[in-house]
Length: 257
Image (cartoon, rainbow, N blue to C red; front, side, top):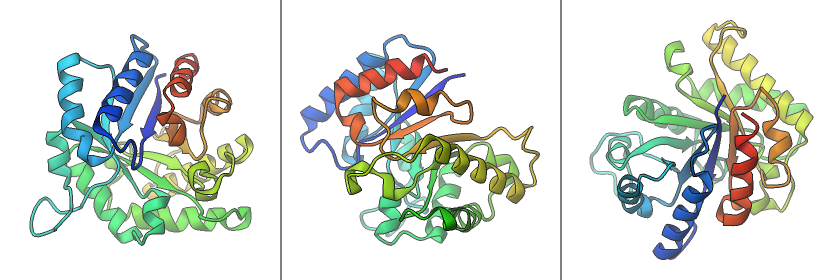
């Protein structure tokens, strides 16, 4: 089974030539490896240039976006819509990242973004998880976020979404903390699967759902995290900006498939 590494560059790098350099370094690291799929989600301003480079040089990576707006077009200053992203070769999009939620993005807005992405044939990567470490309320938070975010989505479309468990308190770039323990990651994924299957009335044994983990994934822990069959991959933040470390992660991931 192919494993996924979603490289979330956030607001980095600031210089276009550095961004292109990192893109090519990432592509070289992937090379001809067939058991790992790498998706680069750069700042929006780089998408058009990256799509041109990926096509021209036939780079073995996919292009993703960090956000999108739910309307197709119109008087929405500063927004980027799903159809626009599709024309730039974007195949998937992060939705509901904790850093977006922290600045006021609501579950209602996330729900609209998921539907817009699905309509444009873009795979939503839905990120859910608690803002502060508190195991006692984790399930309540996951139930609340998932049921609100997926409201009105069809059971058929449920398998077109990738679901990422992202405990925000564990993100190293914002908190300096370490990844959640492996046991708790797997427990969180199990909670998510149960909630989603109940919501869509799916049989867990037959449900074709993809789960990722995101929060302080790096070269030191990626082997353990992706050794678990419950996980289809990881969302990688800071480590994806360090070319040599991310190369190591790609090599490791290709052996865990």
